[in-house]
Amino acid sequence: STVPGSMLLVLIVVSFVLLLGLTIVFKQAHLGVPVWFWAMGLTGLITNCIKNYVGRLRPQFFGACGWNEQEMCCTAAHYTDERHSFPSGHSSSTMCGYLLLTLYLLE
Image (cartoon, rainbow, N blue to C red; front, side, top):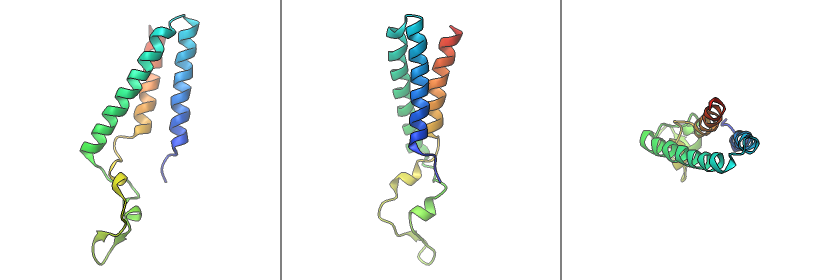
């Protein structure tokens, strides 16, 4: 099984709310919010480029593609997303959000 997308949404929202709260408290919201959006967008772009380049199979690839042992091929029509396993979009987005939060707190 894979990690649900709702978990990624929760982690991104939590990091955004923490950063927004801190920037409002310290009266720097005009700096923190655009930086967060740029960083998340750049992280998503880099992660997807690496996923397309690496093309590592997901753990459930053979089940999703309908692997046929006799013909040694996939029988399912659509299994293109199964080659985007590495790096994890969840972990890269979470790392980006909390790295920004850490850098802001160290400032």
